[in-house]
Amino acid sequence: GENVEQHPSTLSVQEGDSAVIKCTYSDSASNYFPWYKQELGKRPQLIIDIRSNVGEKKDQRIAVTLNKTAKHFSLHITETQPEDSAVYFCAARPNQAGTALIFGKGTTLSVSS
Amino acid sequence: EAEVAQSPRYKITEKSQAVAFWCDPISGHATLYWYRQILGQGPELLVQFQDESVVDDSQLPKDRFSAERLKGVDSTLKIQPAELGDSAMYLCASSWWAQGDEQFFGPGTRLTVL
Image (cartoon, rainbow over all chains, first blue to last red; front, side, top):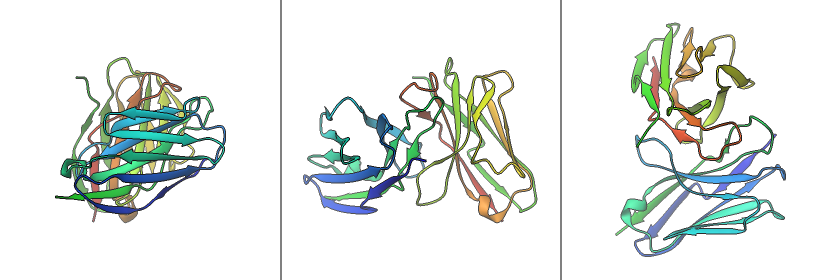
């Protein structure tokens, strides 16, 4: 079955710096890759997603890139702010009817001012 | 904005007791998921419903866990008997349909088994 690896597990940056989180997946048939942000004690919330027919997607300060050949995708956050501090999860959805998301283990991002 | 509702938010129980969690998905969402999130890890699927039917329960410990979605709307997840290793966050999510994209998560139920 699908397996998602996420790195790094923790990331500390200064306010204004960029942050990059990387994920790899094993199932070449996976076709949907969302990123969720989870603040302490709160529900995971979708911040950006990408489908397998797209190589890059951007939304203001966040962007996601997908390399299907290498089976990896990355989250890029530019001009980080203290409110970006949270746990970020990548996920992949295998392209089979009725399948759920497979999540990475998460990255704890700390942005210090 | 419509949100997935869950209750209770917190539950403390002793091992061997029974516990139940409730989830009300966003209106109109046919697909409902129960995930378990152990501290420091990503959510892992326990069971998935399409309307009232179970689509995937391969990771559900069926000797102690059960789930139902009788009318294809809200859902209940039960654990009986609870074990120490069941302490975790139980998250419910819903989406429009099985191959629909965005999954919307509820606030979760934090279970502590003593």
